[in-house]
Image (cartoon, rainbow, N blue to C red; front, side, top):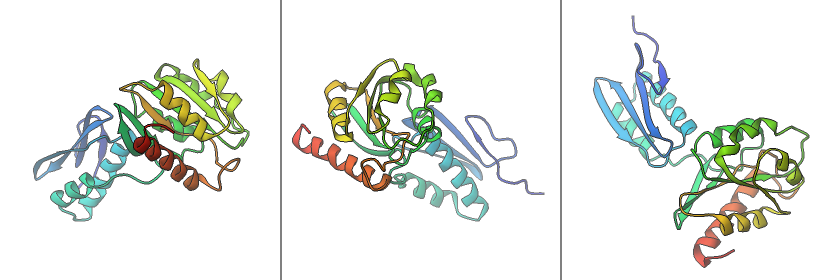
Length: 219
């Protein structure tokens, strides 16, 4: 009897279909094990998107999609807007838009996708939720630059913090301290309603600021 497709992250799949092997969040390899091995790689794919890709590939295969089509689709998929969206790189510094992260659980998923040197841009509308569970990532955070209504609340969470009023000011501070190898990550842990209509507008505005910096060399 055909076993249900099984997806296992980081290990061999017993009676399964999809195995993911990754050496670093920036370079995951998805190996499909059925009629022989089909190996293909992703450029700059985060841990949790790698897991999503694994499950999607598994389900597609069980529905009859060929391994070749699965590989082609996943290799050409660039992620979902505002969900750990890669914006670009300048002088060795990578910029990510995770504006959809309006709670600590989503921020944890983003922070787990990088090993170190994270300049975190966080803050926004105060929903009255605690941020304490983010403190376990303190060693990964080069600096937390907070903004908006909750800007003061991050001082007790991370060792290195800077407070600003707006997201643009936070990004300017990030650009000033960023060095090659750093990651500038907008992952607010808050809703946007203190300064923006919704998280989509916040994310679009962030990307416009980053692209302006890429063009002009300053913000």
